[in-house]
Length: 123
Image 1 (cartoon, helix red, strand yellow):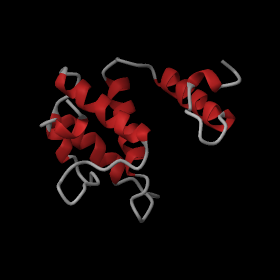
Image 2: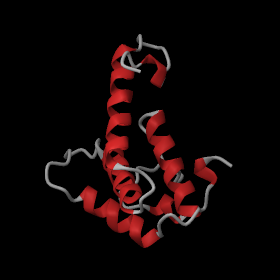
Image 3: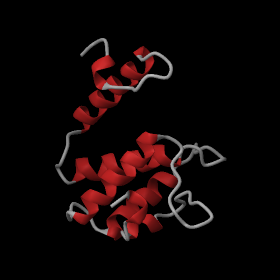
Image 4: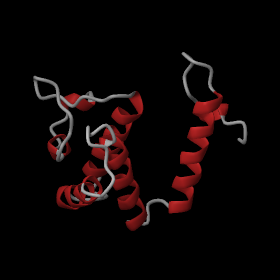
């Protein structure tokens, strides 16, 4: 089942960009993957719909957000990270280290090639 076919309440997340037919729209593949991870963790009972909505809403209402909403999925990932840390599923330092590793990998990857953690020169 694709992410768009899921009937999860997460597809009703506040501000989620949608196509004219109501399917989620993702600006980059990583955003779709973050959505899919969130749906999976919600379905596994790591957090409830209410907990997700509250955490995402907090991120979406932080000062300094992009006026055009282009940082929506950055807020999504921040909310997911906060929930994973608060539930003891992951440590904040591990998430931060992975984030930095992905950034280095992206910077080291030639244009048009897939970004892989193996491209991080420090790995």
